[in-house]
Length: 340
Image (cartoon, rainbow, N blue to C red; front, side, top):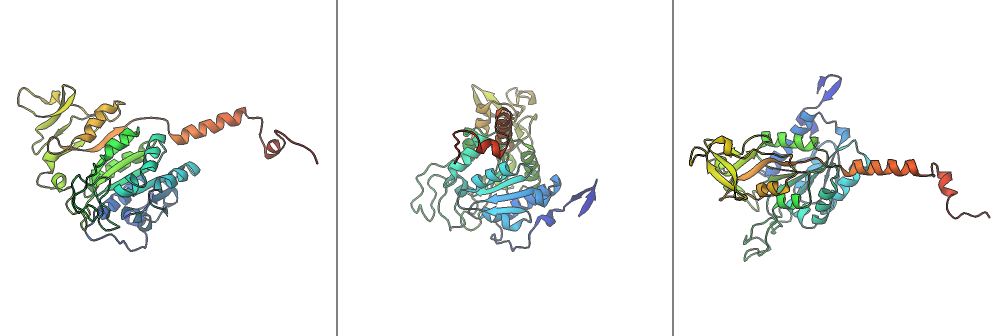
């Protein structure tokens, strides 16, 4: 531990529990775990003021591996528990760990209502496009036509776009990262923690056993600079091996251009505004897909809106101030009463 201004700052390893980590060797969950405990350390979170909540799945083993308060709940219901924890104890920093199956299939209803209510929790969605814990069934994000244990002839389901769903539920914060990008992930998670309301971070995560290489066309180190664009608020949307490509808006559609060609200069490139309430532009960004576009990463949307917690506190205060009932005796002696 390091003493700093009368506050004990824990090192990342001090957030690890004494439980054996049982993710498969090479699983992307290991890297996400390291990003999270590094974030906890850099934020200076105390163990007693942190709660990690999960449902069911490989990602949902997370609470066992961190030495904080935690709750491993039932399939798809992590959001309901996380919301209750935050409302009951607002001082807690609440982190919900979930996968694409846990959150978007059986837990889909809980997910959209957490987002629309804007409960002040942080949702980390590990998207490996497969059910890993139950051995390789297709999930709500599996690609159309994908052959899996439960779709031997190719799935005929159309997959969810996680960002589309989050913004469609009127989410106030959405970001995207990659499991192995620890430095970038830590910065995103710190911003998610600082956001007042529901923050949702999608991790493209690799399942080495049942869906190895699911995101390889985007994450391959040899081509990643051409196929990824890392957005930062207030900075132009530029990408490419030589930082010579960018995104412009033409005819109400995003378009990839090369700086220096056809009179295009850096001044023509769109500047990212994560704080605008323009949902349409953010939807365009989350929908960008290879090969027509690079895939957008970083904080895509971060807008202000009253939180469920604050509105509930405000409502209770207003009702309490107007109420004639101040004590339990007032309550018992109100309404229809009689003497025996």
